[in-house]
Amino acid sequence: METPVIFHLTTLDEWERAQDRGMYEPDAFVKDGFIHCSTESQLDRVLQRHFKHHENLVKLVIDPTRVLHPLKYEMAKTHDEAFPHIYGPLNLEAVTQIVFLDPITSEP
Image (cartoon, rainbow, N blue to C red; front, side, top):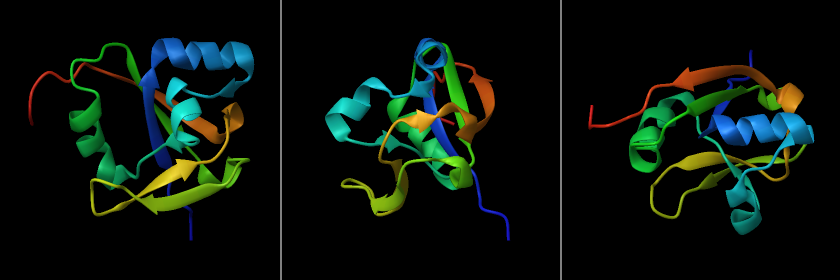
């Protein structure tokens, strides 16, 4: 059985900085201690909740079997569901696809 991919949303600028550094570590990593990710079923809600009116967004498609640091599914404090968290910088070879997203400006 194939392991389902996970997703991370970021800006094109942050992704380009990751290319220069050779790893991806978003600003929130320092505060939270992990990289926030989501499953396919969680993705639209995360976009609506946290990324309205953002421009230059990209969706990173991540193969969990390629992630070098611990990946844990943990319950969110404000939502009754478990989200995938990566406890360390994301190695670039774990990203299998980059999808450019249009700005989200209204409720679906």
